[in-house]
Image 1 (cartoon, rainbow, N blue to C red):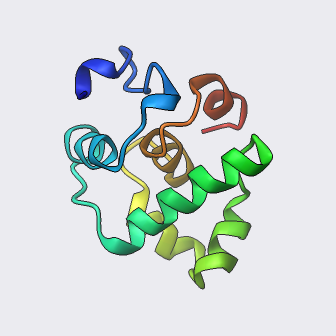
Image 2 (cartoon, rainbow, N blue to C red):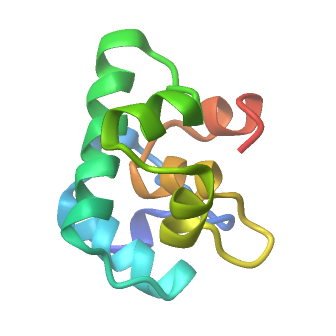
Length: 104
């Protein structure tokens, strides 16, 4: 499975087919990010949170969980016109409509 599993906007077509490998590939090709361990842990946290609550956590929740500031989260994920939360949402393979309705 690879990039062919994405729609025209770069969202995973079937969120159930998400893998860490695909996330790394998406990060590299869409956002020019080579994921660090910290970024990968945040993405996995988002996926687990979604599985439990069927929504995205607020950025404050992510910051508190990882002891990061808003500028640090932005430095890790924000790219060009994409918000940090939007990048995280895509890389976590969450449903497109959830990402859009959450303002990502």
